[in-house]
Length: 297
Image 1: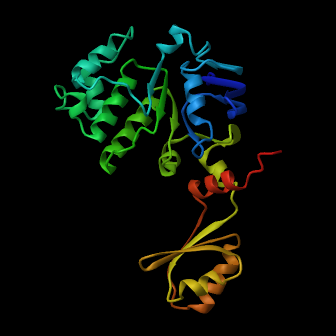
Image 2 (image 1 turned 135 degrees about the vertical axis):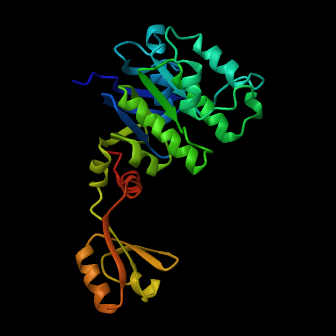
Image 3 (image 1 turned 90 degrees about the vertical axis):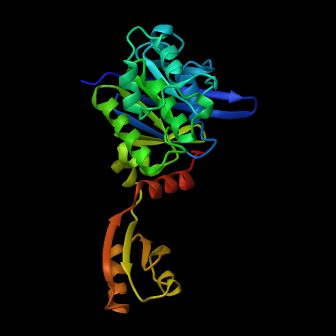
């Protein structure tokens, strides 16, 4: 039976006349949860409240059974934020050792270096690391206390594809070992690949929560991919075609009636090749939700 990791109830938060959160409520019960929303949706404010960086104005948040500001709760959380504040003159090993001293049972330095892909960088200063290496070190610092909750804000920014996949695996391993992860990311393929659950937030309110498949089902549209001699203008004129994209020798059509559009495609181009029909991806569902949900209700 899963336990509640985070419970937020009717959270509202203002910066002067700007309302960052507006009656936000949600419950996280473990696994990997992706927090999605456009810029200005309230994601950063929510993370800061969960971490106890900001005081709660209205509503209540419970994290790991206690208040976010409780030191006993903070010791069980690891956080990787976009602004690190890490001293640039300290080496990788010095930073790891320093952060390890904050926790009662930290991971061994060798283990965390291996997990984060930092082997061979022990004596390099933080300000001499590449952007991707800095990201991996910040991830290591978040992991070193063996946190029950890992909060990650855009963790793979600046990573090459290989390093990105390696970090994905480390995040998944942490969850598989029983840790909970709150992942805030603009990479929707990352959320689709990693998340057990997705929260979509906009204008400070929770729009929807569920599995990635639950979110995708909010959009009835299908994607048709194929190779065809038909021009983009002709495809755009088809009834029920929402959009057309051309990628080298393939076209991709978004439609609410895949059967009718496919029949017309085959009638207009009997030599059509490589036909694929799939459901909408998480990115399409996200854009649909944040563009069309009536938040005034």
